[in-house]
Each structure stands twice: as C-alpha cells, then as structure tokens.
Length: 192
Image 1 (cartoon, one colour):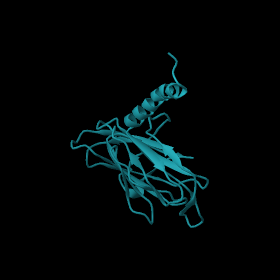
Image 2: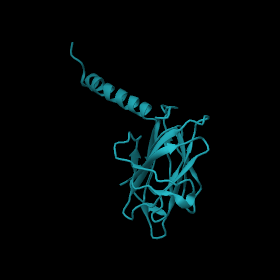
Image 3: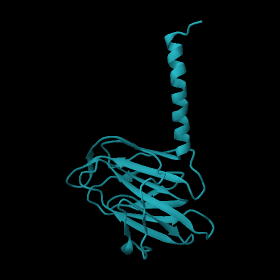
Image 4: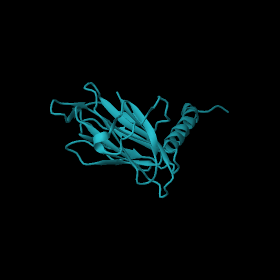
C-alpha cells in the first residue's frame, strides 16, 4: 500500500523532532536572546546535571548606542559549552574584585572550598552584536555590570544578562557544593 505524501512527510520529520527534543533536554540550559532590550530572557532546560561537570550558558544580543544601552540587534541562541576552546588558567590572586582576571575569552581554575571566590572581568568589543557566557562546573556565577541588577547563573537557572558595550563586567565564581571539596570550573565569553 502506498503512503500519502502527508504521511511520508510526517515519517521523515518525526526523527528530526525527536532529535531536537533530546538535544534540548540533554544540554542543560538553552539561552535565547531577544533583540531590542537591555536585558535578554533566558530559558533554562530541565536536563542540568548536579555533578561538577555540569555545563550552562547565558546569552544576550543587541547593538549598543553611544550611551552604552541596547538599541537594536539580532536574535541569537546559545547552548552549553563543552570546553572546545583552550582555557587560560586563573592567575592568583583573583579572590577579590580588584584582582579580577581578564576573561579573554576563557579562564578555568579550581575553587579550593565552598568559601573560596574567584573574580573575572571583561568588556564587550565595540562591534559585538551578541554574546554568551558559557561555564562548566558545579558553580554559581554572579555577573555585575554598572547600572544593572546582579545576574545569577547556575547550572539549573539563568537570569537575564545585560548587554552593554563599553562597560566593565565583573563575574564572581563561587561553589554550589555543600562540602569543602575542591570544585573545578571553566568560564568562556563568546562574542559574535
């Protein structure tokens, strides 16, 4: 018996739909940026792991006006980072805001215990249209940029990340574990 063209099309697209659903579930966090706003809405997935190898991402897109606020831009999507780029080891001391390491484009290190904090800083390039902050490890990132509320990113949730050209971003990396065991982390800034 011959299948109708609609039945054949459904049979061909069903594996693709399943693949996309599995991919979105397994990646942990999918960040979607909307244009035309100072901060971007981010969607958190349900598949985030609670191990030290979990990965997360948060993204924003837009174009900056001369005042440093977002005026327009293109949409973008960002997923989790598997650590494909090389990573520059953190340089101690970086346990204080004044000693923050430059995130260019990635840094990695180890939090010695749950009280340890590491600080990173960066500025978006003038021609950046979208950005994402990818990270791995059982850590929380607190992202501060002047004129905006603190943004909190964890493997389970990602808040809105401001997109501000020319501003000094400060990222605090802290452990999410209840033990004093060391926690490895990696943070990467992706600009497009």
